[in-house]
Length: 339
Ligand code: PHE
Image 1 (cartoon, helix red, strand yellow):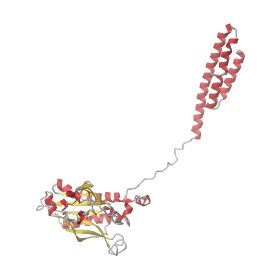
Image 2 (cartoon, helix red, strand yellow; image 1 turned 120 degrees about the horizontal axis):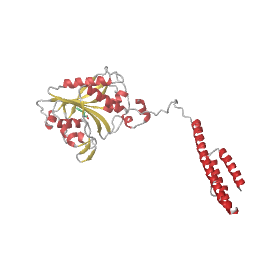
Image 3 (cartoon, protein in one colour; image 1 turned 135 degrees about the vertical axis):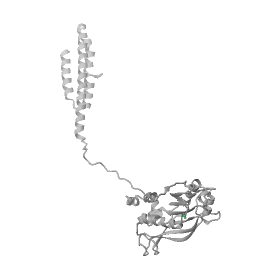
């Protein structure tokens, strides 16, 4: 029996040495040392030996088991190392290979115009002020000298959320908020979203305005005219002239609408300017003394000007965008053009 055992140990050593994978090794483990293994069957046969030989034989089998277990463990480490190395070779990572590029997005044309406008006015000494999109009638209408029966209060223009709660129709609300809280000198712009119930190629229910307000002693209409000229040239180019057309706004007197020379035909007349050579940019005027009086600013001492420009319109003119709705559809084919 001993000889038989030695034979088996030899063949086990041989098999283990040749095992090429962890799978093979597992099979050898159960064949030689598992519950139903050959070595265990020797233990069962121990009863056939003379009593005196049994303890020694039992020991020999146990030793053999331990020896094989160690061999198996060693071989397992060897196989794992081999597999690791061959993995390293087959799954080579070339660190010099260029990576996959992720496409970067771009700023929305309105964001670009918004930031450009802020930069221009900050360079001219203005502060940037902000106000809420959800407003009350006082800030959107009353304090802007817009009486209750003014057509701009009509429901068809203004989105009312509740009685006396509305989406601001203009950034002029921020003029009011600034003058409520500050005495002159005031020199601010306030860019932001506005809302009106209209929707076509040149109107969007949500749009963007930038308002400017300058209040101090001795501010004149000529200062307003001058400031707008400077802005227009910085924004659209030195060759772009602007002009004022008489107009009416409840909170400015006198009031004007601002036009610039058509950026496409430079005044000759084309489809963009509908043949007139001019494009409308916004409104302007001298702050009505009534507004000062309502907000506690001395209208005998101070004068001021204000203007408001459609930033979407500026974007359309600057980038020659034919339809305002393109700005809000978020079509990537459109947005990609502003990288
Ligand atoms: N808030 C006016 C509008 O939305 C524009 C404007 C602003 C006019 C400031 C005069 C002064 O039409």
